[in-house]
Length: 46
Image 1 (cartoon, rainbow, N blue to C red):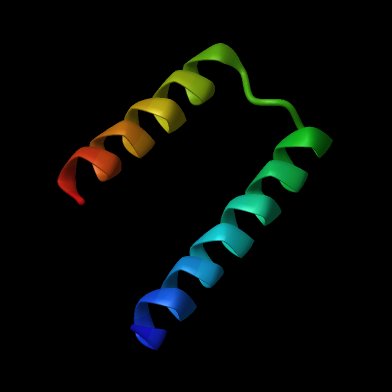
Image 2 (image 1 turned 135 degrees about the vertical axis):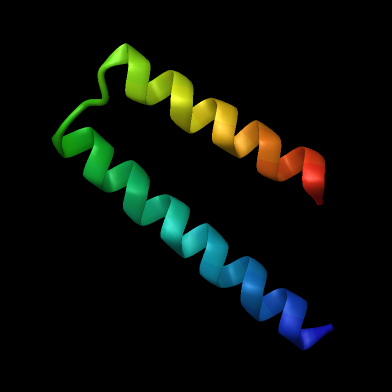
C-alpha cells in the first residue's frame, strides 16, 4: 500500500512540475492534443 501511495505522490509531483513548465511555455494545439491522448491511453490501461 505504501508503495502505491509513494508512486501516486511522485506522479502528482511530476504532473505539477509539467504544469508549471507548460505555463512558462504554452503548448501548441498539436502538443496539447498528443498530451491529452497519451494521458487518456494511460488511464485506460490502469
